[in-house]
Length: 286
Ligand SMILES: NC(=O)c1ccc[n+]([C@@H]2O[C@H](COP(=O)([O-])OP(=O)(O)OC[C@H]3O[C@@H](n4cnc5c(N)ncnc54)[C@H](O)[C@@H]3O)[C@@H](O)[C@H]2O)c1
Image: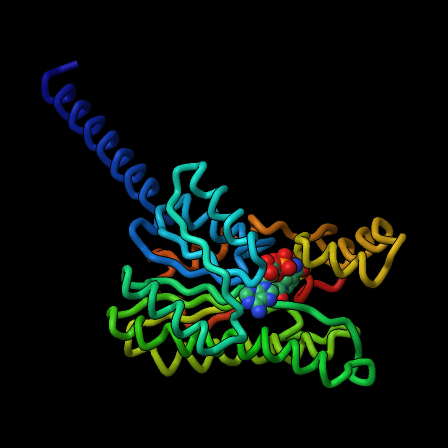
């Protein structure tokens, strides 16, 4: 081998190594949300808890909000044990003065970058089986709760030069499923609030998207089965699992992974979109 061939080979090897190293470095820093301050509502359980844990693991300081005394603390303890940063707050998202006060206090401590509106409750029934009190209860938490957090956070995000909002809707916002009259109404509102906010604040560098899960195995589902099918929980769990063409329910961690992507800078071109995460529920007819 002459000297010129050897030099060319060495150069090529160096270039390949450099390219590989650059690619690895780029991959390594993807989906990080270091030094971002995130608020996650309803993060004492289920999907919100997984989102809070993953966001903290990826470098964010997470404010964990939940109405249940002790639930937010439990999530924060889990985060801190693994070296993450988080703070617990008891908060009822349907209480506007309380939400405004808390979000302003967080902003004073450190500027907010990310808001995840996850807190939500369910009710099973068609229109005739839905008493006014249940309709109002669902509206207060699932619709007004999201509105309250948006109302409290958006002025701060504007002042901070931008931010990301993620709303947890549901497949029921887009398709009809039996006996979810009030719940579907609320999730339809979450979806349309997402579009409205995304457009109105696009000039303020605020992105707003939503995730629409089909059934995800969380305490939400377990409580539903215990309340509505006592003694038949296992049978009904299997039945619900099979309503997803993929043959199972989702996991909270799978939803959290999508949430992380949408709240990361890798999703900087995405706003005003709803993302079903549904094992084929909406688009596939088995
Ligand atoms: N699990 C599913 O199959 C599924 C499917 C689609 C959408 N979702 C939505 O995902 C979100 C999370 O659901 P999950 O399954 O994790 O439920 P979950 O019941 O496990 O957790 C919800 C959390 O929200 C909290 N919460 C309830 N009301 C609140 C309030 N007023 N203020 C603050 N916190 C409150 C609860 O204490 C609880 O910790 C909800 O919005 C739900 O509608 C769930």
